[in-house]
Amino acid sequence: MSFRVVHYINQFFANIGGEEMAHVAPELREGAVGPGMAFNQQWKGEAEVVKTIVCGDSYFAEHEKEAKEQVLAWVKEAKPDLFIAGPAFNAGRYGYACANVALAVKTELGIPVLTGMYVENPGADLKDKVLMVATANSAAGMRKAAPAMAKLGLKLAKGEPLAASCVDGYMPNGVRVNFFEKERGAKRAVKMLIAKIKDEAFVTEFPMPNFDRVEPGKAIPDMSKAVVALCTSGGIVPKGNPDHIESSSASHYGEYDITGWDALTAEGWQTAHGGYDPVYANADPNRVLPVDVLRQMEKEGKIGKLHNKFYTTVGNGTAVASSKKFAEEYAQKLLKDGVQAVIMTST
Image (cartoon, rainbow, N blue to C red; front, top):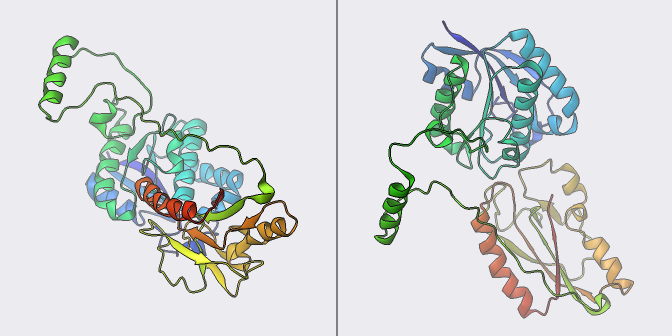
């Protein structure tokens, strides 16, 4: 018996196009497309993608209700044994769509569902409701993601009980199941302690959360005298992107002078960001970096001065460690220039 699978992907993995084609409405295709072919290879006839649903990321974000209704209708008609979405890696809107479509199929149709994405993808917020395989942060990790998702997907289609997340390879979802260990807790704890003292590898049975705490800055007593700077992860750069800031997974940031600019113009500025539709930001870059508003506040005396430099990068897929490194560098420059407040804009 070959299990029937319906697969959901976005416009990029359907080979329609990139961000410029993110507006495409849902469409239904026969058989496997893109990553679905990799799943079929892994299943070796035990399961098969019989239908592929394609939907543009922007379309889903702007027409979520309609998109879900159409997807549910197609899935119901196909009567699959399993529904798979993605993998989305670190594409935020794609991850959001995968997680929410999978949740709708699970809730409305009662069909086993699975998706996959990077742990920092916004869609991963639903990992307690939808089974998710942790992937790399870019499509370069497809070779590892496809086998992991195919293996777990087949298990779901067969109706086999799940093992622990560390065994079956899905993100921890908060579900705890009692079972008997071979060794007593005291013995396991002593073994871990000895390994830790010897600086040897060990795996804790109860990992503690690691919260990043940032002390709030002191209140500025008089904003009418304060020097305010703009920073952004929205990718606003001079026309032509002279420093070649990447549209995703940025490796650096840019520092640009806005002396003499009362507002950013489409002729002089653009966005390098690849994670949202650039049309509106390119038409009016102030929508992402509000130089026009801050200049007006400067003229009205609401702030003392707008700093003549701003710092920019692309937040799309950029690692947290890289983001911290960027901020640590330009924060020192801002302090040196006497900046007292920073407005950080995103997308």
